[in-house]
Image 1: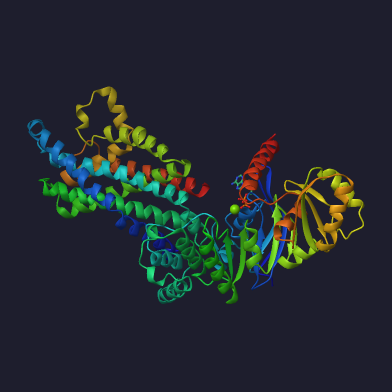
Image 2: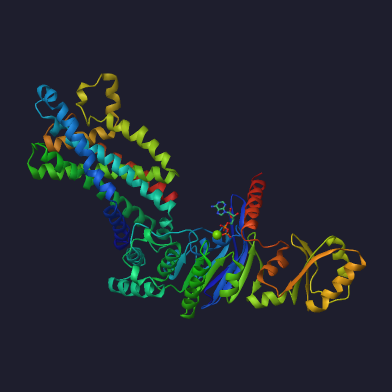
Length: 249
Length: 331
Ligand SMILES: Nc1ncnc2c1ncn2[C@@H]1O[C@H](COP(=O)(O)OP(=O)(O)O)[C@@H](O)[C@H]1O
Ligand SMILES: [Mg+2]
């Protein structure tokens, strides 16, 4: 069982290592976000809050990137189906669950790796951690794991229902992007008009961003226990849906 | 114990019967071919035998294990080369085989040893570390065969192993298939190339529209339709057919009119052809051409189904017919 999961996982890691484009975008995109937006708004931001904008923005960019990467890693199952490798896995004497877990862990690893790259970039550009490094890093890793797990599962669920790449584009544009914009990743939620606040509150990503800021900066809108409960519940629901959809397909 | 045994194996897709009560018995060590046009149900049969599809009804044993109840045991004991490519083309040849070995629970040193062996067998040892994306179609096919053999299965399924390959590459693949069969692997091969079944198989089953229409060794099948096959292209095939039915010559089965003209099976063509000229002269039928040859598997197919076997053109038509049957089935 462990060996089977590892075989599937190993393949995902080799593929990740091979795809230079993906690795480069991992670094370049957040660099642009942090470098341009972070600097442009810094002075205006700092006068109204006690904190600099890079520190505020980095956790948001991390969560945003992980939501995108996690969902996209679900695409690999569509690729597998199109290019036939899925058959190779399904005809092998391994359980469907092993294939599923191996794929999920592959996606989660990739997603967390991206999160960590952005954290390092943020720190290099002047992000200040308020909590002790141990608390900050372990808390952020936990949050990253939960967020990644949820979105990888979402990707898997979507992948097993869709047969084309256009479908994926739709999900990214009409589901993931609105979630990111309504999560407080780029601005304090407080500044939103109240009619938009309900959208923020029902958005699970809000709690991911909030938990991330709690662990790194010690600032939070909601209690950390609410953040973590929502994330755990959200992950579990999506894992259930994702594995059900994967096994059905 | 037979390597593969099926009883009334059937698969329906929404009421459309793709495989219709197939009975097979394949001995250990045999090189067995499932021959039939596109849409005959070959891939569906292989999918059921390899546990990818559940039969609608009937039973199948592979290496003595039931494909439904003991799927895991069946999977461990078979190798398969799918009709459609299934390599990971971002990985190297070696990595593809290594992952495969892991999925089949092979130990590390065993994997390394076996990778070398199977790559050598298909002459790809020097490309072990190349990424599969850089491989030609023939090389990919060879690597897929190597991968199917990696975990030393007792039975190897090959679904149209030479589909779309050029004649020279095809001949190479044939050589590998013969070689591994000599080494004791039972092979079940599907093909819609008549000459492939003829060149490779110890035994052939011809399937058409999900049913077995004929079974035997290639030569026994050809013998079963008897002697030679004469094809006559003429002005009034119907009249000639009637006249020939009355003629006192050694006709081994009822003459048939096909797209290629009148087809007659006879014991000895040399004796019958002069009579054909006489008869057509008497009935003022204009003969455009007469050809005769020893029967091929094409003729066997024609004999048992009443339809000419056309690899490409025929397949188009078959697909259309299938679709229409599906639509009718839904009503
Ligand atoms: N998943 C499926 N759903 C519906 N019809 C199918 C499916 N798979 C195969 N068929 C139909 O079953 C018939 C047999 O297909 P197949 O086994 O692929 O034939 P072959 O491999 O001999 O060309 C075809 O008419 C095909 O359209
Ligand atoms: Mg087929």
